[in-house]
Image (cartoon, rainbow, N blue to C red; front, side, top):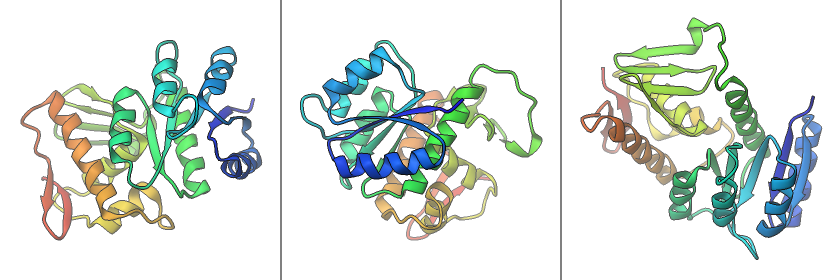
Length: 231
């Protein structure tokens, strides 16, 4: 049975092009051009996942997410403009699962959607662990099949992008990863994001780990070079 994805954006060109790309991948797609219309539709017929633009008339993506989270935990991906870091932070705090900056690669969006749907399908299930999908580094445990992370036994709720960054660093402790390598790990080789995006992700990652363990210091910055996971 095909997964249903809701697209909410006031740009009809984006709705049309992304709908075609998703339908070609086998998804059922519903589209909405503003937040108020979307809230009615998503409440009456909840999809498996929603992709929300932040800037919209009548009800923006932030308010829509806030209203949705009162009754639903469906996976949500935000679409944000290039410099809306504050919006990204607010969105993640309010319960978005990931965000992608405009202009974006449709292939990247499809991969993010697939990853979140896989994670949702595995949530709460008992599955046979594939040792190749599990990484343990001291108190850190990463489960690639579930996109799940824990530190000292405490779950850390990471976006897909954040999970991929931690995994890239933890796979080879002590080895420095420059920003280009981290971009490739998190976004793929054919998507460019600026250096500040990686730095923002790392900053958020540290904050999430420190919320569980104030002494967390495993992700080290080598100024002018990149980042590494402490051995």
